[in-house]
Image (cartoon, rainbow, N blue to C red):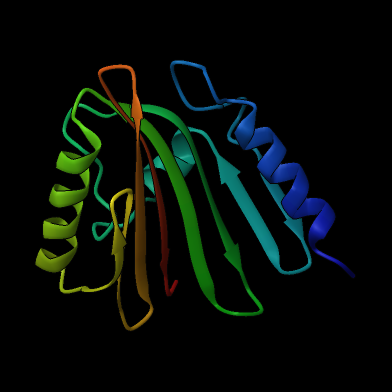
Amino acid sequence: MSLRPAISAALLLALGACGSDKPVDGANLSIANANLDVTTGDAACSQRPPHAPVYADASYVTCAAGAISATSKVSGTVVYETAAAPAAVLAWSKAEAIKAGLTEQLSSADMISATEGDRTVMVMAQPRGSGSMVTVNWGRAP
């Protein structure tokens, strides 16, 4: 059985929150399909692990988190806006990843990624008005 329909549905629902002031909630959508369980909204925001911090003045746009039992991995995405410039967000995110024991893997003018064992984080920051739109992708063992 293909997981693509469930993953596509979850992503479409998560993207539906883009442009709103708060994460999609609607009873914290949960999709269970063989090996996939996806949650969006406040419940997904609260699943964000310590190694994937968000900037102090973050205004959440959307959150999604999911567990894939076939791989025993949990991952998620947090999208938020901040008044900070992209370079400041990325420098802070890199320092926080290092404090959490991760090692930088890749970096560019608009992203950083870091890993340690099963823990991963990738932060992308783009200019948005006078601040930034930030996407944090994270992964961890359950």
